[in-house]
Structures are given as structure tokens and as C-alpha cells.
Amino acid sequence: GNSVTQMEGPVTLSEEAFLTINCTYTATGYPSLFWYVQYPGEGLQLLLKATKADDKGSNKGFEATYRKETTSFHLEKGSVQVSDSAVYFCALTIRDDKIIFGKGTRLHILP
Amino acid sequence: DARVTQTPRDKVTEMGQEVTMRCQPILGHNTVFWYRQTMMQGLELLAYFRNRAPLDDSGMPKDRFSAEMPDATLATLKIQPSEPRDSAVYFCASGLTGLETQYFGPGTRLLVL
Image (cartoon, rainbow over all chains, first blue to last red; front, side, top):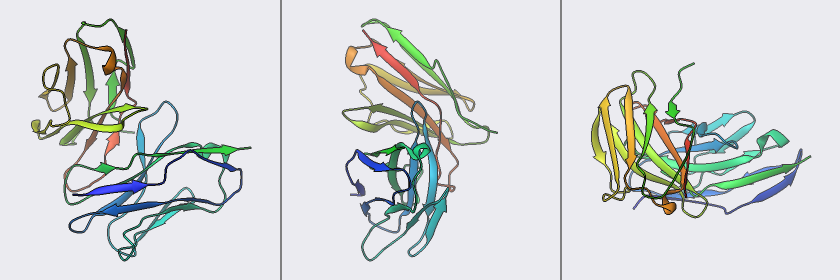
């Protein structure tokens, strides 16, 4: 079946550190891949997406590249801020309305 | 700025009581999803509608949960009777077939005592 596996948290970094959150997927077919972010007390919101192999999604300094050969979609940011503290969800969909979410990775950024 | 709205934002009730949560999807969206989020289980899909028709409610305990869309602007999730294990944050999300992105509401935080 289709699934998403992401690194378990929490991840704790100092401000301005480099961030990587790993995400790999299993899918039958050609999925679109997403990163959603959930700030405290809020619902999830789309951070970035990529719809085909080698596409790079980017937003707010975050980037992720769709790697078909390694079935991965790792999230990166060069210099994190305290305001990036949140829970990050990797997700996929395959020409369907439903989205399959990973379990989420909690990120804490220390000032 | 179109948003998904949910009411109530917080609900505290006693075991055995009926709970109704409401969601107003973004105007023009034709898919609606109900999720439950807990620390232990994470984010779980409970039910999903397309064009107001239920397509998948396999994630929902059928004996006590029910989900409906009386019209295109309202989705409801009802729990009767409620139990302490139902305590969670319930999210509604809406989308448009073909666009793939889901837009989440702020959630209803439910506490069953």
C-alpha cells in the first residue's frame, strides 16, 4: 500500500542552524508529494509541494526535492528561526482526493 | 481570504452526552475531510465526502460516530454517546478534486470527562 515514513522527533536546533527532516515514501504509481506544517493551536497548512520527479518545492526558505530513485522528499532549510517551531508532516497523494500523511516531526528552535 | 471554519473551537462535555461539530468548507470546494488528532495516534482520517456523498468512512467508529453533509456549505460530525477516549482535536479540511491540496480548519478541541 501507499505510505509515508518520516523521522521521529522531536528535533531540537539552535537558531540559524541547518535543518533536515527526512521523509521517504512507498507508492504504487506516481504520487504528488507535500510538506504540511502545523503551528501550535492551528490546523495543518501546506508548506510546499512537488508533483513529479526532480521537481523542487520551496516556500519560506524551506525546500524539498522529489527524488524518485530514492523515493524521498527530505525537507531542508539553511537557517532556521524560532518562528519555525512547529510540527511538520510529509504527505502524498496519487490522483486521489485523499492525502496520506506521515506521523509528523516536532521541531523546536532554541533562541 | 477564504478559510475553512469550524465550530465550536472548544467543547467540554460529560461521558454519554451527544457532541456535534460543524464545518463550513471553502466556497466552491467539493471535497470535505474529517480528521482526528491525538498525541498517541497522530492524525487519523475519519471520513471523507466528495460532492456531498460519503466516499470513505472506514476510519470512523460506526456505532457512535456519524458524518453528514446536509448541504454544500455545511459538514457535521456527531458523536453519540461520547466517551473519554474520544477526547482529541477534530479537524475539518476541504479541497477541490484535481488540485490535490487540502485546506484545514482551526480544529475543535474536544474533552470528554
